[in-house]
Length: 561
Ligand code: GLC
Ligand code: CA
Image (tube, rainbow, N blue to C red):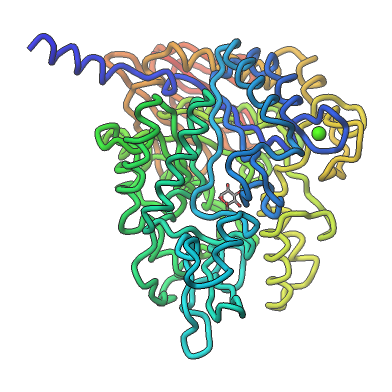
C-alpha cells in the first residue's frame, strides 16, 4: 500500500518540462558565425548565454540534417549527418555540451513522414519495382492513366508524382521533392528506430516530431469526397489507423528508455485524439502542438484568403483545449508563433502604435494558460511580419505555389501579395534582430533571406529600455517555474461573448489567478476579482476602483486572489 501511494505521488509530480519554457530556434535565421549569410551551430552556441539569461531550459532546433534545402531542412537526405551549411558533428556535440553546462536541454526536430527525394532510400526506390527500397515509399499504379487518387498536396497541386521509368506514381503530401514513407513496412520502421537511437546516444534530450500524425495512411488510399472545404485526402491519413501503435513503439524503444521530452506536430487533430497522444499512461508523446487557434482567421477553412478573426472564436477554441486536455490527462504545448506561422502580433494585435503592449499581452495570455509555453525566436523582442512586397523576395515553396495558384484562379497580383503578407510563413523567417547594424547583427555577409523593412526593434535596442518585452518574458518564465496555480490549476473562461476582452481564471485549491486582456485599442471597463493583487501587467500598474478596472489599449493584467 505504502509503495503504491509513493508511486502515485511520483506519477502526479510535475515533470521539469511541464514547468519550463521552450525556445524555438530556426537555425538558418538565428545567428551566422562565418558570414556566409546562413545561421549556424556556432552561432547558436554564441547565443546560449542570451537564452540562459532569458530563463530558457529547453531549446527546440528545426532540422539541421543534410538536405537539399527545398523545404529548409524538412527534406532530409541523410538523417545521420549535420548539413555543412550549419557546421559539423563536432560543432553539434559542442552545442550539446555547452547547452547542458547551462542546464539547457536540446530537442531535435525529426521528420519521419517523408524524406528528400535525394535520400539514398528514394534513389534506390525508383530504380525498379523489385528494389528492396521500393516498398519504403508509397508507390501506386496509375488508374485509367491518371493519379491513383484525388488527394491534394499541402504545397498545392496533386499529391502524386509520376515516375515514367516505373509507370507509377509516388505520394508526396508536401513538396514534390519530399516523398512520403511507407510506415507499414517493418524494415523501414526498424531503420527509423536505429536512427533515433543514434541521436539518443549522442545525448540529445528529445524530439519535436514533424507532422507525425500523418504517418499512417488508410489502406488502399481512397478518393476524398470534397464535401467540406478541408477535404483533400487528409481524412485518410490524419491520425490514421496505426499511428498510435507506431508512436507507442517509438516510445518503448527510444523515448521512454531515454527519458525524452517529445512534442508532436498534430495538425487537423481533434482533442479526443490529442489526448491519446499525450496521456502519459498510453506512453506516446509528452505534449501536443495543435493548430485550431492559429486557423481562426481562415475564411471558410481556407488559408490563402484575406481573413479576419473574432476574439470570441479565438477564446472559444483555446478554452475548449484548455478544459478538455486537462480533464483527460493530455498536455498542451502553448504557442502563438513558429516558423510556419505569420507573426501573431501582426495578425491578432497591433504591431505598430501599441507594439510593446501587444507583445506583452500575447506573452501574458499564453503564460497564464495550462501547458508548456513556447517562444519562437524574436517573439521576446516583438518581431513582426516581414511584409514582403514582391514575390521575388520569397524563397518558400509553399508561399510561391500559393501565389501562383491565386493568380491562376484570377486573383490580381496586388491582392495575392496582400494575402501572402498576411498568411505566409515567410513573415517569420527573416533573420533574428540582434542589433540595429546592417542585417541586424545576424550576419556581415549577404543573408539567405533579407529583411527589406527598416525596423528599430532589436535585442540591443529593446533591452536598453526599462520594463522591456524581454524582461517581461523573463518574469513570466520565472513565475511559471514556481507558481502552482499556473502549473496545475483548473481553467475557466469568463464572458465568452465578450469580443473585446479575454479573461480567464486559473484555480488551485483556494488560490486564484485572473488573466484579463484588452484586445482592442479602446478603453474597456470590466469587473475583476475582489481584493486581488497585481502580479504582472503590461503597463506596470493597474487603474481600478474597488473591483472595476479601466483597461487601457491592449492592456493585459495577471491578478492573484
Ligand atoms: C511541418 C514543418 C514545416 C514543413 C512541413 C513538411 O509542418 O513545420 O515547416 O514544411 O512539416 O515537413
Ligand atoms: Ca553560417
